Length: 317
Ligand code: ZN
Image 1: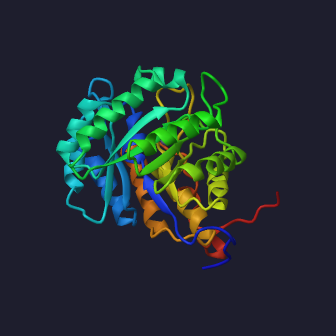
Image 2: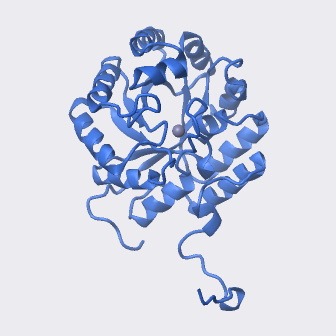
Image 3: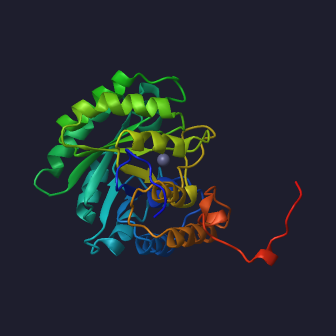
């Protein structure tokens, strides 16, 4: 271990969202066996929390039509925490039947993005969550809440921190024990992260707070740094930087898991992951999708990767 950053947490947890958030916007169907192979590689790299699929209408998102099969392949991994995105009652019934560890319910902090994303008002979404909470009662399946557009909305611009706080409070009241602030459109900045985290901390009670950034404007990892400075220990990312949001024009992918793991370990924050194996998993994702992914550490290797002197030409400029 090299230098560490004072004030950062000793450990952080990465939730891998590539299998859901990452693959969801891929137009060509990724076969169930390839999805399983990728998730297995991520488990082998030490990741233990996954947003593994979503129980959405196969008509709306054909890529996720194999949700139950993908989940079934890993349900026996008791050391892994497997969540699935659930948009409505029908999805919740399917997720419970399939045996998820937790259902992730989501609504946007801005009205217009929520209408565009799930065709409901924010109040309508929250009413739906109460029904799902009743359905989940007694099943042992936990509820998590994601707040989309928590740092800005592509249709409305700035999102008031008060709207985010109100939504988090509603989530806590519904019994959610884990809340994610989603930077759906890459509008987060380090300053906004610090502001939102400080406003949210007093109302979270025992619920954990996770941060989910996209690297749309190049400051995804700087936002993680801001979160670490506030003691936040949960971050979401996708292998290779897979993904985006199909309803946000030109939005690019999530921060890459291997880049996040690199930042954490080089800051003295333990993650339980193996960087070389994460890089291999990112390369596997590239082979599966047959295109280059935006992750950077997967291309350069870890910091102390050295080469024989005669293998590199020196350049004057
Ligand atoms: Zn995302």
